[in-house]
Image (cartoon, rainbow, N blue to C red; front, side):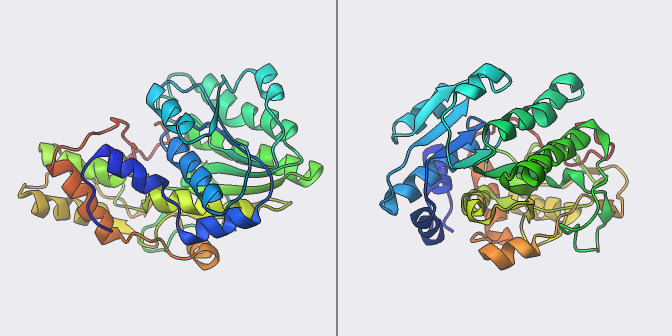
Amino acid sequence: MSLIENAQQLEETLATPNAKDIDVMSRVSGDILILGAGGKMGPSLARRIKRASDAAGTKRRIIAVSRFSSPDARISLENLGIEVVSCDLLDRTRITQLPQCENVYFLAGRKFGSTDRTDLTWAINAWLPGIVAEQFRSSRLVAFSTGNVYPFVDVNSGGSIETDEPKPVGEYAQSCLARERVFEYFSRDHGLRCLIFRLNYAVDLRYGVLVDIARSVFDGRPVNLSVSAFNVIWQGDANSYALRSIELCESPPRILNVTGPETISTRQTAEFFAGRFNRKAVFEGDPSDKALLNNAGVCHQLLGPPSVSLSELMEMVAHWIETGGTSLNKPTHFEVVDGKF
């Protein structure tokens, strides 16, 4: 992939469907509802779905629902012909007033600051899914989740697979497993066709683990080695996998790990960026031989490998930072080992 020079080009790249996306939207019938469409991934996923549907010649309603604290996100969706609904998803009355759609993408969730309002974290991550699943039990539903539901595993293990027993560390991860279990209940007992989309970690050029490490090196701040390895995936590829996962929904629910194929060394990543920026990498923390790691082999077998390689992604991040690209200022806190994000 060519280097990206500005936010407009970045947004365009994230939202441009590939041939497989278009093919899926040509086969999938019914309207599409995207809940939590105002976050980091929601706007570009919604635009990708709309463009893929248009390219497939499929006429359908595409409805994006969020509080939309960013007016720019709302405008970008409306300009494409996506219906936008401003809604507090914790307002049960508003949820019941949303139109029934055959296809639902559930992106709502709370992570950052979750140690300050653990009650709100549980409400959004565990109670809200029940409201949504009850309302849309006749739909197909892709529920975004996280690899944080897995235990820490040996960095040489290849990562957790979908059949591994969840062992979430900390209240955030526990609330995410609760979200999964609620959707699983409605899938098993009420016929909701569902896919649990266990993603970690998506990267665009303004946020993500690679960005956290690269900016630390660029700014001369120490890189924490407490978590010595991690996984990443380009957000454009995560968007594509999410879009196409709607065809994989089933009852009982399917679980799908979503990330890139590599287990990546934190130290080696910092040293790459140090060489790229002509800086010295500074480290802190004691490396552990365990980390939160996903094995996405099933995803790659079903949906194909990511289109953007790790080396390409690292070059893109480096170029973005050294040319003054913006940041969302939303660190991943990937170095946290006690679950308190």
